[in-house]
Every structure is written in structure tokens, then in C-alpha cells.
Image (cartoon, rainbow, N blue to C red):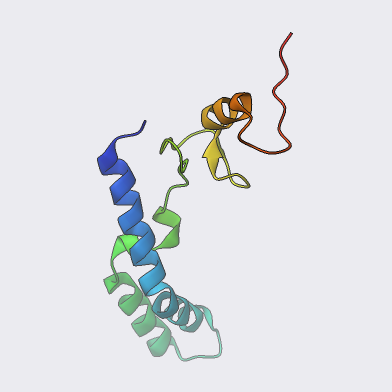
Length: 101
């Protein structure tokens, strides 16, 4: 199990990223648009820099929903390989058969 503080920090980042997604996308669109004047693009870049760092979706870490483990994460199942193996052995995940010999 991962540290509770790490899991909570990641949840906070997810909330911030969701809250600022609209503003961030508008400012990025302006900053990248070559048809807009240089001053407007620079102003958009400065406003983008003023937003909280943790509001960027790049800073959100994929974590296992069962254990909070940050590594060996399967996106499709939203869990780590260890949690997948345990739940597969118990027969909780439909269609998954753990081989043993």
C-alpha cells in the first residue's frame, strides 16, 4: 500500500487539473496560434505560467485504485500488476485465469 499522503496529493492534482482544464486549453491554443499577434501570445504564455503547477494534467500520476501503487500500472484495468494477480487468483476479475503448474 502506498503512502496515504502520496495518494491524497495525487487526488488533489486530479481535482486541480479538472478545474483548470478549460482555462489552460484556451490559453495554450492562443499561445500556439501563429496568426495571433506576438504580444497576445506572450500575454497568454504569462497567464498560463500564473496558473498553479499542479493544475497541469501531466503532473497527475497513474496509480492503482486498489493499492495506490504508482508503478506497473495497467491503464485498461486501472490497477497494478500485483493487485491484478491477487484479484485474478481469487476469481474476482471475469475472464482472467491465472495459470499455475
